Structure formats: C-alpha cells, structure tokens
Image (cartoon, rainbow, N blue to C red):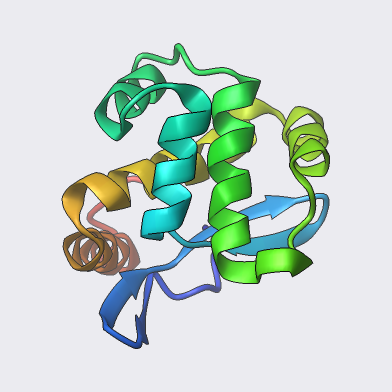
Length: 135
C-alpha cells in the first residue's frame, strides 16, 4: 500500500479495502472480485486457503504472485490492464519481497471478507498513526 492512499474507501456495495501494488513505477489498485478469485484458483490449481499458506510459509513463487496481482489488476482495469507476461516481468523486476505483501493482502481480504479486512486495515492505520504499532 502506498503511504498516501487511504486504507479503505467507500465503493458501491460498502466499504472495501484499498490494496495497492506498485509495478514499474505505476500504482495499481487490486480488486479481490469473485471472477478474479475464481481465475486465481483455476490458474494456480489451489484454493485460497492453500495459497494463503504458501505465502505465509514463504513457499510462493513468481507464478503465484504474478497471477494474483494480474487478476487483481484485471478486475479493476479490464482490457486496459497490462498482459500477464508484462505483470510477471514487472514482478521479477521489483522482486518478490517488494510485491508479495499486496498479493497476500488480496488473499487475506477474500478470506476474511472485504468489509472486515477493510475495517482491520483502517484500525491498523489508526494505531500506526498514533505510534502504537511498529512501522
């Protein structure tokens, strides 16, 4: 997430998390839509819980990360999104450590529920602003 982006925003249907990733100098807003999540599961051959465990155990790879970010970008931009190969190349360029947190956030938002995840992120942001959470 970028420092100046709100942790949450109000969108049609309620509060949703703001999940941003910067690739190649451009910041993309990722959307954990139903269609994106289905495509992620199909492409990676695993359910969201199994994918989340891969990330938490640091057993994920470029394919996992690129697919999750790509589908999150496509859910927001549609045909204006960069193609999968371009996203993959940018993931390699930026490094897994730099972009994996956004992929992990997308998975976590889907598993927790968008509104609950957004509320938790907002609370984390408020605590950080008060100085009670380590950066």
